[in-house]
Amino acid sequence: MNPLPIHRYRFNCRAQEPLKLNLYSGSMLRGAFGRALRKSVCVTGMNDCKACLLYRQCAYPKIFETPPPRHCNFQQFSQIPNAFVIEPPPMGGRQLAPGEYFSFNLVLIGRAVADLPILIHAWQMALKAGLGVHHARAELIEVVFEPGQAIEQSIYRGETPNQLLPTPVFTPEPLPETDTLNLRLETPLRIKHQGKVLSSALRGRDFLIALLRRYYLLQEFHASDYQAPDFQALAMQAEKIQASHQLHWCEWDRYSNRQQQKMTFGGVLGTITLNGDLAPFLSLLLQGQWLHVGNKTTFGMGRYVIMPQPSFG
Image (cartoon, rainbow, N blue to C red; front, side, top):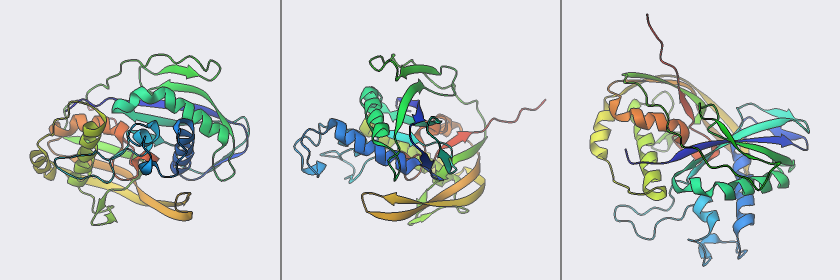
């Protein structure tokens, strides 16, 4: 596989005013982040980024609304994947009192890893401006690199705002060879076929091709030395992978500031078991735990974890 740097950071925060977390707070965080990032880097104040002379140089579109390439030999893109994922707090509505702590994760991909200082500043502005419909203020306490991993390390603390420690080198341990993997969906998954989100009809091929496409689009537009894989051969191998699952539908309402209306979102939660010759896909499946899969990944949707394999004897 072509190299693609992927880092996860946990942002530990403290509420300063009563803060309501909805069933799924990914869109709330993404909206606050986008507004703060634009405010912190925009120098022209234009309403339409695409009409701005700095459209292809500005950090805001580069990170939040990645421009399509000027020329592409194979395909014309109206939208390409952004190089970040916001992983919201665990699902479930709750009310935070002033002084209570909460956390969310930010995954940076490819060249976006180098933008971490800008993004920390944007999150500080977003929290200070306030979250949710009531703009509840909060503060950033700490940023932790690769939470939950053996190399977990605090790299930034709000009490020393001018100090950002270097990002350590991290490579996940490879998966052992296996012909069965159990995946648990941590956030709703949306993989579409003919305009409909797949649930009981989800096949192993659907999951793997969606993940494969996402990985290599990110690698092409946000990394270096892109070399297209043999997609046809991988698709043929993916056809042989069987999937069994226990899935249920989950949906919630969110308000879109851009469209000025309430919208209903949904996806499937549960477990997926993949069976077959998984060797060509093990590295991809490992990194997919950081990348997410399906639609609305920047909201944090499509997050999965590989469940431990049962041991015998």
